Image 1 (cartoon, rainbow, N blue to C red):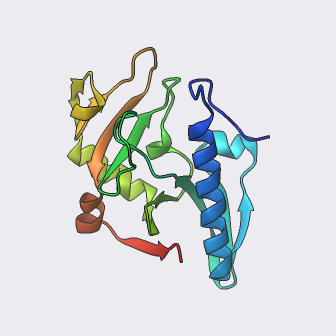
Image 2: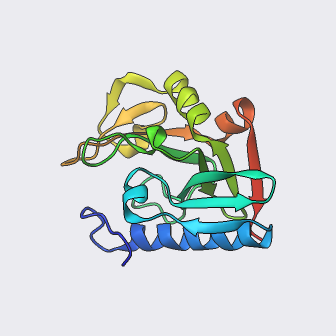
Length: 172
């Protein structure tokens, strides 16, 4: 059974996430990787899939589906990404999870980046003392959704491209 957070009232976020994972796995397998989906306990530690390939160490990844910046936006955004310091329960978010890599879905590709390096970049870029009440104001500031204990922010994809090593896996 697919996991669905209690705050995901419609189930759309869960469906989008599982679809992104399935798509990423199919791309990985086309490139000769063996993919094993994480079990429930591993998923709670922010790992979605393990990839293995001869002559490579096994890699753990957390897959992130494309996201809108505001719920009311008509389209997802390929220039900005949400990052999670604390999850909705107030526990460590995926930036400090167990995955070695984060794979961000975009319209035409997945961007794969080292999670620890991304966390360090986010700690530099995001003002941890600046709190906002609206998602539209969350660029480099901490946003907490009403009734939740999360601490999330927005950074630009260009921050990754300009500062970190990354891989691009085309969808086609």
